[in-house]
Amino acid sequence: MLTESERARLEEFVPDINYSARYSDSKYEYRHVMLPKAMLDMIPNDYKDSNGVLKILKEEEWRGLGITQSLGWEHYEVHAPEPHILLFK
Image (cartoon, rainbow, N blue to C red; front, side, top):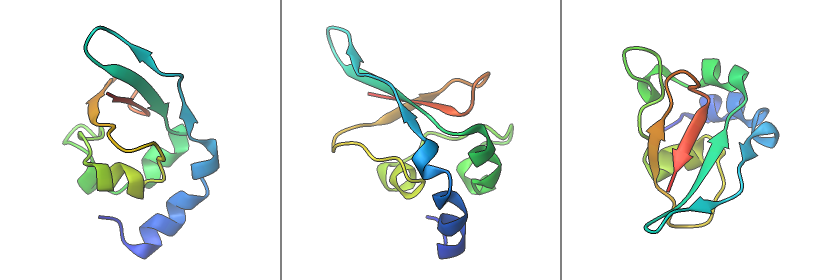
């Protein structure tokens, strides 16, 4: 979980988080969330793997970063070449 000072540093980026339209297959509904690239440098290292790519985040973690979505979304993938894009289903 983020400390108050970490959360405060990230707040300036929240208005610039972009959400894709929802898309689906026969099993799931999906969307991707694009964080501002500068925001990645401000996210604490314990949210990242040894390569500096975001780990799969629990709901309370991604909500703590300022991502807002309806209930039920699960962060399931990060595309390493574009680590600022989080994939949800």
